[in-house]
Amino acid sequence: MYRIGIIGCGQIAKVRHAPEYARNPFCQLTAFYDGDAARSQAMANQYGGASFDTMEALLKSGVDAVSVCVPNRLHAECTVAALKAGCHVLCEKPMAVDLDSCRQMVAAADAAGKILMIGHNQRYTRTHQKAKELVASGEIGRVLGFRTVFGHSGPESWCGAANPWFYDRSQAHLGAMADLGVHKLDLIRYLTGQEIVQVTAGVATVDKTYADHTPVEVDDNAVFLLRLAGGAIGTVQASWTFYGGEDNSTVLYGSAGSLHLYEDPANSLVVRRRDGEALRWNLDEIATNDGQNAGDRAPAGVVDAFVQAIETGEPSVSSGRETLRSMEAVFAAERAAREGRTLDLGAG
Image (cartoon, rainbow, N blue to C red; front, top):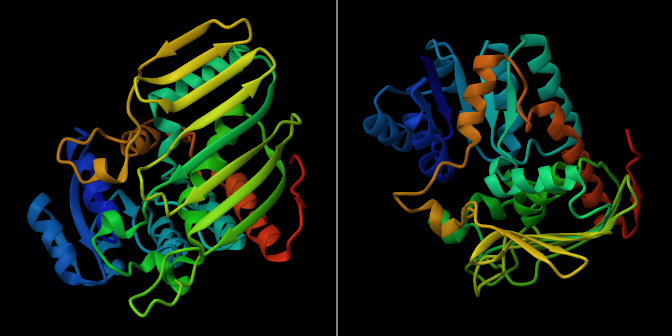
């Protein structure tokens, strides 16, 4: 039985991490810490265990593993401290707010001999896993292009705060680009098995404002143009201003057909062959912000994968080292948008 601590008891801990640990038969939630003591105490009251006044006290309490669910700027600090204390770590995305910090996290995991996993939950949906198999088998031929979208009405729609920390540059560093875009950059790498070698990007704050009507400090929309190592080009769109409904769809275009994910409400995966034949699967429904508040939400798969990695000692498909390449692309996109040019990442 693994003793689990949660560092940061905000919404993602409440709706994903804590309930999924509670459902896992190999875990016991024993320790909680949050800068707001009332939040950690509320979680301790709900799941048992203790609320701690400091992260350091939590790490000394005998926990085997922790989830890091704090604002982005604290990811690296908390993760490195937990690894040095001998804990396995599941850290929320984005991994960190700069590439050096990401590398420090991986180095700390290597030095400690512990599992470091990043919460890229899109790698764990049944539809995306099946799609990866189909692409690898050559079902749509050589991948030539793609488009992928992740948009919803903004973090305030599910975290319950009018001005959440996501809008504070000092806390989040980036907006929709890092909150949603990082998922899709990572997903394209996962589905195709190819690295991103070139990126162009544009970001804007087009609608989100504070109460005084001044724009929030981070981007609420981002668009990327990517080139993959195999030559395919495609787009990633991330938005906090999809007020008419959430879109979390992906299409891959290949030399023998196309593959459509979470685009058809009746079928989570559709292959349209070049000869006109269509193959359809209804494997699951992708989690939405509304769904994350539902009491009967299905597990995202991240916590179970984390526990399995601890048990087997084998890195997960969203290990810290694997995530480094996705973060390289994110920070390259940030720079490309800032400088108004295309950047090469190389195929390393």
